Image 1 (tube, rainbow, N blue to C red):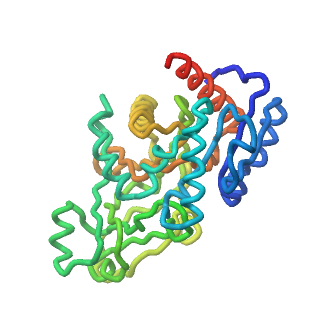
Image 2 (cartoon, helix red, strand yellow):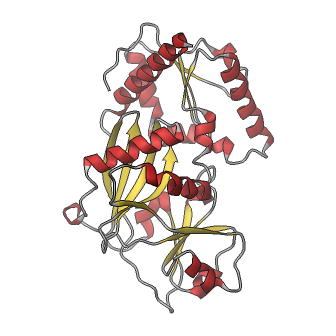
Image 3 (cartoon, rainbow, N blue to C red):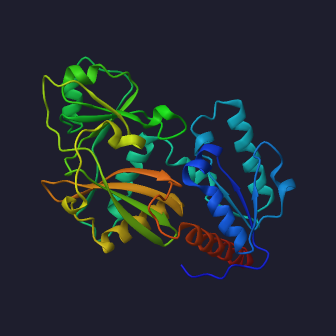
Length: 324
């Protein structure tokens, strides 16, 4: 990811204060400043052009895109739209329309199905089976059979971000349990994966995988009650632990490279993460989630890597502008 940091490099950034706190972004700003980079936190409520002559703008708009009916969200999105149209010389990481692709879980699942065929040479990767329920149908068993879903089933909200509730999930072990959930819902197959979750972080052409403890292997159970949890505090409500020495091996570097390149190309994103599990019966790797601008927890030298990535994006953007 080597790239020279330009002289007088000016980075504008905009994200929710909660996101900054969660990922320790103040440390990123401190690091950037120590390298001679000018950093400006952009107020999306004000005219953006008045806040600085930016070389690159790092923006996370998913929290506003998830609810475009909200007046404040519409104002902020329109502000950014006007800015990008009137200041094409500024590199935006990443474009608003690209971020829009990953805010709805149903759209993400459909997108993953579409691009799976483009992952050349990755025969051991598949996407998870799913179905959307706008209401709980009377003939629920037939609907599930048509989607090739069987219990246990994981139940998620359609919105992938934008609220604390978007991370609340549940597992239904039987039909009575599933009927207890309120629609609309995204139902997704539960893949037994020996508690091994592979979180892949991407920064441009670079990627890294971190193995984390996940949910245990589960089976259908007519007498078992629903299991509710929050995906951002997964292990807090799950009994049992798993030593790292017992984790399944992550997918090969070649496999992950093919996936990250394909996703980046199709989505138009350079900062994203995705989750993989390995089916402990078939050995197939299953893509279960994708998100924009994750926390990059566990990634070493993240501030330096992010700075290098932004410089590289800016260099490529300006080179492209000269060819127009």
